Length: 77
Image (tube, rainbow, N blue to C red):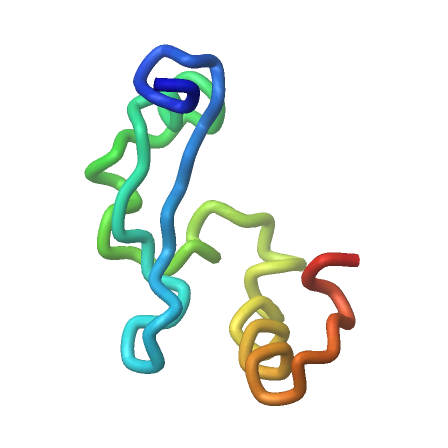
């Protein structure tokens, strides 16, 4: 598998559901090597937990705005 375990690629899957938006639902074990977190540290947590505070404070608003307007101001830019 191209992005499986030990692929030197950290894969993080987050929820896009309204009630769980931004919550990490899955990741591979490379998260420990790449970012220093164990899978248990971030599964069921908001993705902003692993971001620097300058980004995490605004992250939910960026995502909400993008989903409401489809206008990328940060996402995809």
